[in-house]
Length: 114
Image 1 (cartoon, rainbow, N blue to C red):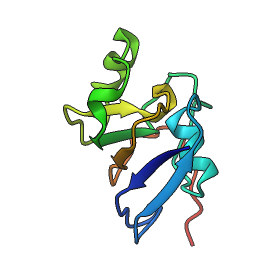
Image 2 (cartoon, rainbow, N blue to C red):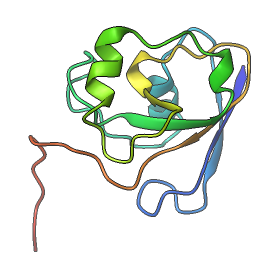
Image 3 (cartoon, rainbow, N blue to C red):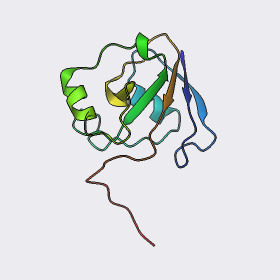
Image 4 (cartoon, rainbow, N blue to C red):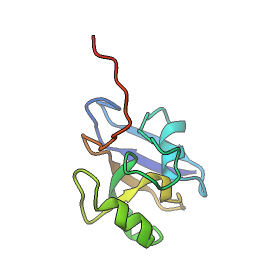
């Protein structure tokens, strides 16, 4: 199992979290399985940027992003040099520390306002 540290996020995990993930799973699947309800509006089909994360530690251990992923990331809020789409990151053996940006660009999101 691979250790993933999730830095605090005001809505998704205010205290931060430490989860264990199976190597070979996507980072998005690992976060969801660990109880972190990261957005993934396109059902992980690499068609949006809602699952954008910033890999603060362990970035250099990941496979390089594809050109398609890089093109999508150009539209992500809070883009950083270590930005990735969590649906495109395969968890390996190296531990990761990730930050989920405060905002996402989700043009299809429906919210209930009370």
